[in-house]
Image 1: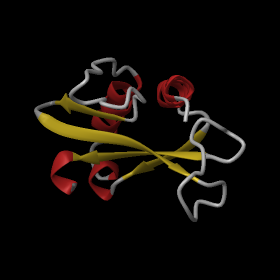
Image 2: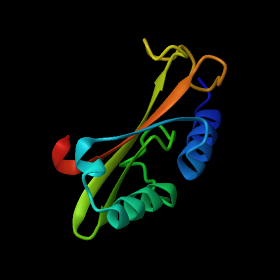
Image 3: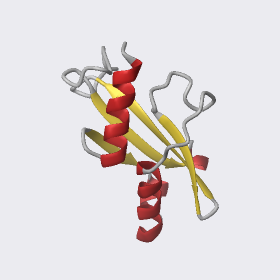
Length: 107
């Protein structure tokens, strides 16, 4: 698999929210709308990738803190029908990206 292509696709999706599905946990959806907006913006603008939090260089996970609350986001790769894992996350013809955003304590 092409980690560079996967990273580019993940960054494009995460920064625009176009090219996949966004899932918010019940904890995130129950936040005040202003805080939810701040969390979404924090995910879109995340750039703090390191070898420690991005060992495969795919830019598929991050952690942010908004108003003293820690949030995680994760991109997973599914087949087009969302039934199984993608056979090739670098190929948009066989992959649906799903970005899940949660409050850390929901993990």
